[in-house]
Image (cartoon, rainbow over all chains, first blue to last red; front, side, top):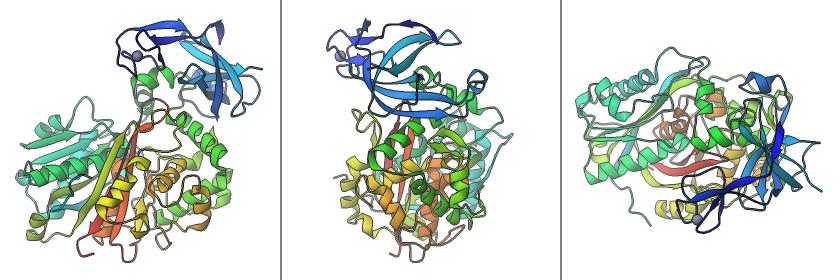
Length: 113
Length: 388
Ligand SMILES: [Zn+2]
């Protein structure tokens, strides 16, 4: 995971609801104009798991692998790769976009003081 | 309150034996299930005018393609994309078709194949949201989502691995009597706790074994079932919800908690009247949530309930009396039909394994379609024996 970039997500032009995963229309007002904008990158750690099995060789070579779920202060719940010591439910974390081994945009989270 | 389901008969529980892997396509399992439904009841293929199908591996075919494949002309066809909720939902749809006269005899079937190496593409492309926002995070399929839910539940309500172990061990005991269950060897608490981690806190025996197979039943009128001299159960109540509680940050409750009161009111019964319950057990935490949300215990008291309640066929609340998916295996979407088919077996005295003594009313629940971070479909049906 490298190439960290600020957290931008779809935001509804009509009602300002932040969306994730990306949608075609707004989950609240069904408006059709969603624009990627910078949003608050902080959130609360909801849960986490430690993977010991994966369907893909890249992860298989790097197990165990920690994945977390985070409720962003901006609204949505996101899944993210974890960077750092063992996570704690309820802790405040920061989330940003990174590029993974396949060049996909993925979210990575870490503790934030 | 919805109109009742008077006059509807549910009959002919059929299971096509599960196999770990198969070279047959999904249509083979569904077709063989339809054939068994007909031979078990003596109904002619030409009399079967309704077909409800649910399958993960049948695509791009559907119930419509199967009408040609099976040489059937149908008055009524349904294809249900609701995964583990499809059995109860197809039962509801079929029951209304029977009441309305839109069909005379409906087969409700779910079947899937399992080819070696076929699991990954199914997982990777299960939904648009999961392809984009779940799969890239470790490529571990539903284990990731349910490990997250399991840990959040443990943290919120103080559940331990031993609590989940009690559920798995009781179901394994039930499976030990069922010749069709893939896992029948007794499971000890030590075996359970020592199992290898898969996606902590989820370990091996918290996971179902994917396999090939089919489950099905027929729906017709009580009048027709009686005239054919066939044992049947009646549908006393059924409900479904999709995308319930969307603002809950973690799925610690399902749609069952929204419709439970209506479900029991329609049946004129309460959770204490159920002689057994068949929960959807893709993971033990989900089965436990159903016990809470369907009123067998209060929210958060599931762990204590498991410590104090014997879930075996001979216990206070027999649950997943054929072993459930955790022991019988998960034949794709047929995993959701397993509980309804087993409920039907118990109520018509045709148990494959242990018969629950005096089983007259029971509940079968469904849950399906992990689109992103939770399953979206919840459903439940209360069934009663014809001579209750
Ligand atoms: Zn909007």
